[in-house]
Length: 445
Ligand SMILES: [Zn+2]
Image (tube, rainbow, N blue to C red; front, side, top):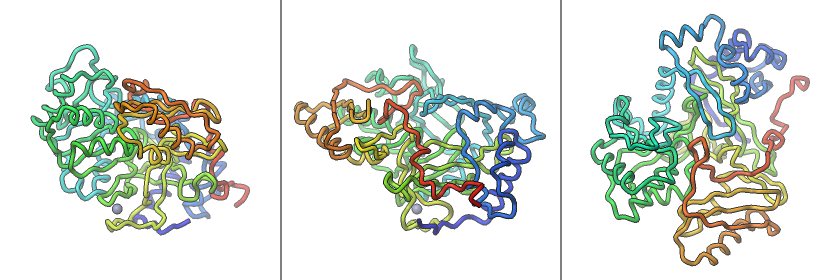
């Protein structure tokens, strides 16, 4: 494993402060004391000996259990210093969180420094358009189309108020295109599935689309198919911003394509998978937040996998914090080969990206050796396409894989508003795939 990572000057003092305050003053972590080897050990080792915080534990401890002694959640809510935010979540569990806008904005601004285009044009007062599910952000209105002024908030314009993009009409997509022209955003923040859909429409109907200064992907994993469809319409810098409601902004993709840790605002602990499943470079991350006096997230299991960069450096010159060569996708998007090896969303997506003229796909692993691939495609030679797709999946999952290709007119997102691109219809316990050599047990110290 390569550990060339350097951290900003306050990284270790903040890590230590958050750990000690959490253990001594935050009720959710009281019982974690038993795992702590104590102040005589290096801070990294003390973190490594701690458990992970699961979403279900946030729910059990909400709200007072995550707040340090001396802070009163009710008073904070009354004064408007904090609010509440529900995540329908791209995972299975829905949770309400304490929302601190000031901290969120500061975390976002710090992340912009990690991409030179973002740091140039994102001033904090720049006009920004957001194309996302209204279940994630913005205003919901499925029956009536909301006029533009009712989808504004401060410097933002929300392009979409519909919960199911499968039902977007051509009038609605024309409206989105014309509003981009009117609003002229510096930054266009987009859920990649939704932007890809708008781009397919614009390409099919030869619409000209306003070019923003920067496109930022959030909410979902951007697939190669998304990129291909979006690049037909947009010829501008693009970046992917990675984080969650619980953790704020954790990684940002730089102009060279690698991901840099937002290490002023969070600590990231990396746990590699066993080598036969992609370790030591692929693993899960646990995120600890810094600087949020209202909520202590200690080793939060964000339920995503990443690939740390093998060289541990980037040609952009940024060398502070972890450097990733890729986000590998959500834990809930993991599937297994017939022999039981883990396949991340990125590995699947890389394999399927060679298929031509696909609009959308979703892979469901229905049992240990059976895979259903749902495809939306205008290709007339469906039997050829079925053959090509089956061959790719057999190469990835094993010759004995039973592959069914199912054609659909359109795919809809999950109840959360986010698309599922891959999933197994049976539980996969990620913890049992972690490399135990990197997990410290107290009795081994
Ligand atoms: Zn870089």
